[in-house]
Length: 271
Image (spheres, helix red, strand yellow):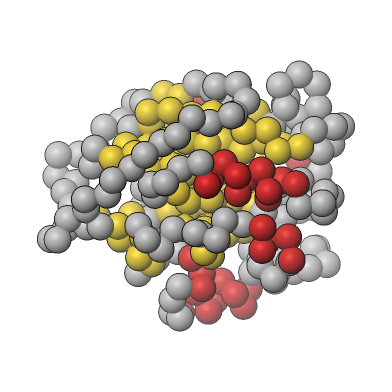
């Protein structure tokens, strides 16, 4: 696999979910493209529940494990290997993928390589941060997508992709995050929590938080959401906590975990 892929066991959500989406005070709307529809054979399990596999993946602008530790800004013109990135995603059988360190247009190429629907949000609109962003890939139709600004300034401009996906006729919101690693004021997590709390239905925040799970700032996450790695005690969850997501001895915090998938246990059960 290329780069740090984080996969958890599938989630199960129950039927009969009532969802109310309230008005959002978000930044500019982002486009999305639906090129894939759920297979007619992709039916829900008995009892009205469906299993989903959620993945978060920082693709390092598509360069994989080349030159670990190099700033992604410097890798913009380097040779990319998106078919290899797509193969890594395909190996997980993911239904929804939150992607970080995307260059604009890579979400479309990955979507077409995987036969998945896709959307993208730039970190910045003009100037700092406008050269990269975050996105979501989905096997299910994307019905809305927004860019939600978290922080601004040279080197610190970051935004979330807030994406609504229709699954079995019901909206689910997936927020792809890549928080700035140098900002420690907690405002980015406050903003993410505020947005997640605008939705009363199923919501998940997935991505590169650039924070340890026990960082006090993570306590600002919505009370309704919990870290999916803490829901189960399985070989996979134990391995995740042991090896972390900062892979590579070049990193002084090798073995630490800064990537996570937070879910609402009222709607999802981690299997």
